[in-house]
Image 1 (cartoon, rainbow, N blue to C red):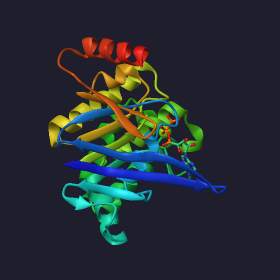
Image 2: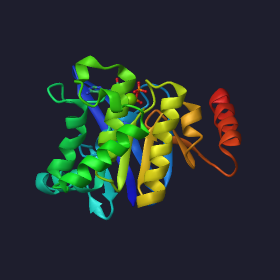
Image 3: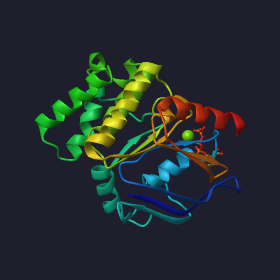
Image 4: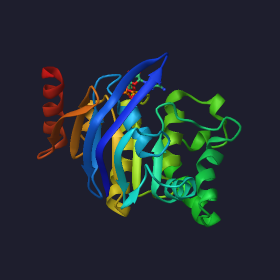
Length: 243
Ligand SMILES: Nc1ncnc2c1ncn2[C@@H]1O[C@H](COP(=O)(O)OP(=O)(O)OP(=O)(O)O)[C@@H](O)[C@H]1O
Ligand SMILES: [Mg+2]
């Protein structure tokens, strides 16, 4: 489903080169729900931004469903984003001049979804995330945690093949965080979505089946779940404590 080969990225600023990804390799199977963890500055957002085609890489290959993201034409990339990808940004990226409901409608309108279906799906997501009461409000009028849930609803609205989520529970209390994890698991079970989620939260990570840790632009380790959420969480906490 997703294959990352020898991915390299260096930022250049003030004649200073900062290599962030140094030949990263990663394969994620269809229907897999995986977490990416690692210290601040280890390259997690950079990785997600490259996978989504928002950022150029310096070398390597990214295959999404057999399509080469790094070398796709702009038009092809737009198609892939619209049809296959749902993205939750670390800073939400909601449009301030649209209500939260319109923010979630937008990608569905662009994808040409049937209007009735669009309204039903949106209503369902808002109900699931406990944000129906803010449907007609603007991003400037709601809290950070509410914005985060709107951003997750938007990312899931077109039933994407691949969901890339950058700390989607970072601003949420544990109950809202659980609702977001439940929604990801539902997306995986109901339409085979593949989910790659950056998180600092061991509890959220323990709901996935696999935890990939990054350090200094390389994969440091992988933990696979083979028990309950609770025992996986203990394993993750233990690992992070030791690391
Ligand atoms: N546009 C940029 N120009 C130059 N350097 C950048 C740029 N964006 C990120 N960096 C640097 O690249 C490194 C990786 O950044 P990145 O945002 O991928 O980290 P992260 O793992 O997502 O961190 P966090 O957990 O804090 O979100 C950091 O050292 C950061 O300062
Ligand atoms: Mg980040």
